[in-house]
Length: 323
Image (cartoon, rainbow, N blue to C red):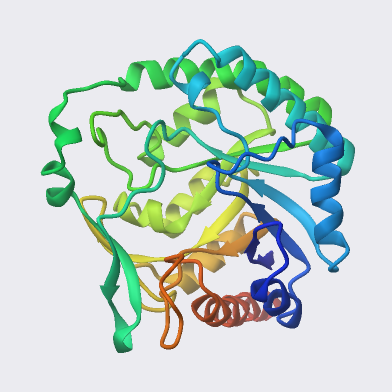
């Protein structure tokens, strides 16, 4: 297992912290509202070199490619698919092994508060479905059906998996966040362990895999270690998000990595037992004293703490295996 941090492609404090923490394999992330045309090979090559010049290896791309036209079967769907094919081919040429994507249409990860007090006064994010239901968007009826999303996901996988296999790239679908449906009239389909079983069966290939985001599986009220063993039994967990919550999909608060509902040591043992050797990045850490809350969940101190906690768990399960 490789502990990792997510870094945007602009050198900043988190780059220095990652290097000082001994992180070598990073997750390159980008807000989809800020389009970077990595479907052009020279652009992705430049992005990769920016990280490499700092001493990092780009192991995963996450959140780079706008794709709602395809998810929603809109007129630009063919353009979305053409760009995605080019991205995966470019990743293969440049040796970037994993693409993390989601099937959340219209609304990405959603919270009703990003300033909820948690341990010691740190600020975290939370979701309360009762608050969402008071939003006018929740009274507009179903505007995107789950059936449409399952249809377009199957169409996507049938088109993309052969490209990924040829390029040597692994696809890793992320759960809905929060994992409930509908959200503001938009269906959500990746919200249960059974849904992931279905997605893996749509195209049965080692390239068709999962981003195991622990916080979302916890919000599904899944047994997280059991779900890791079940979904990863044949090597289909390609990437992991290490985080935790209290509550469930309808009323959830994100926690420090040692303070949630999941037995994190048991989860780490489960990754070991399935032979997971991929990248595991910290995710959605509380904002700590002295930090501004301008980018909730993605400031530095909580992630530094989480890397230390993650490394300690990894060493513990490695020691168990050696006994």
